Structure formats: C-alpha cells, structure tokens
Image (cartoon, rainbow, N blue to C red; front, side, top):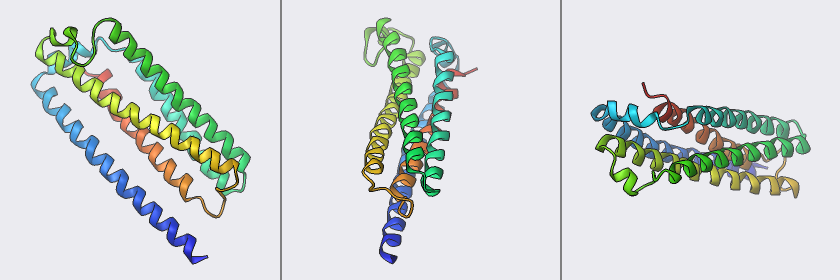
Length: 199
C-alpha cells in the first residue's frame, strides 16, 4: 500500500513542476504582449476591433463549463461512481472539442480575409496592428495546442477508466489531468480580455 502512495505523490509533484514551467512560458509571453501594448496601444485597440468578442465570450463560457465537468468527474471517481465520472469526462472532452471548432472557425474567417502569420495582409498593416495579429495567432495557437493535448489526454483517461485501470483508490492520473485542464482554462481567462476586450 505505501508504494502506490509514493507513486501518486511523485506523479503530483511532477505535474506541479510541469505546470510551473507552463506558467513561466505563458508568463513570458504575457510580458511580451504587455511591452508591445505599451508601445502600440492605439494600434492594438484598432486591431482588436477585428476580432469577434461574442465568439470569444462563448469560448470562455465553454471552457469554464468544461472545468466544472472536470471537477465533477473527480468527485464522481472519489465517491465510487465510475460511470458518472466517465460521463463527466465525456462532457469535458466534448466542450474542449467545441472550443477548438469555434477557434478554427474564427481563424478561418481571418484567413479568408488574408490575415494570417506572414501574409501580405498582415505585412501591409501598420506595425502595431501587425504585431497584434502576430501575438494573437502565436498565443491563441499555442493555447489551442494545449487544449488539443488536453482533449487527447482526457480521452486516454476515459479509456483507462472504462477498462477499470483508474480506480477510486488510485486517482492520481485523473487529478493530474484535471490540474492540466484547469491551467488551460485559466490561461484562456487571461487571453480573452487581452485580445478581445482591449479598451
């Protein structure tokens, strides 16, 4: 019995170290954003008008709701309800996939207007506006990649739960997946106002 506890403690420590490295990565990018915003505030404001704040808001609600289902899945496992846990995880994955579809639609609309990294449309913009879109694609793209990884990870967790390899007395994998998912959601809560609600 002590061995599984040591394994779980090590897994949690490893996850916290990983999450710390992710916070350092995005923290550095947020500082870069802040520096350019200070330099190009009017241009950032103009460029932000081209983003769909409603769609960004919908995606915010989607991710917050997915975090709720993620938390409920862990509660279900801890109270010995694997079927309910599986259902909550399925809803989390569905909402994560919905976020990615919405983001793809938003990016697609920008691509149709010739706004994408390195495009003539971006290069023709005033320097500040071009910088805004470069940061927008870099940060939301990196975040979208994290959401995709989270969806795949949760799919693996669901498979393990379905096969009976994830149990009430050994929930470390689900706990770590939940920590990762909550971090992904938290990052979006910073990205949404930075890009969509600039005043």
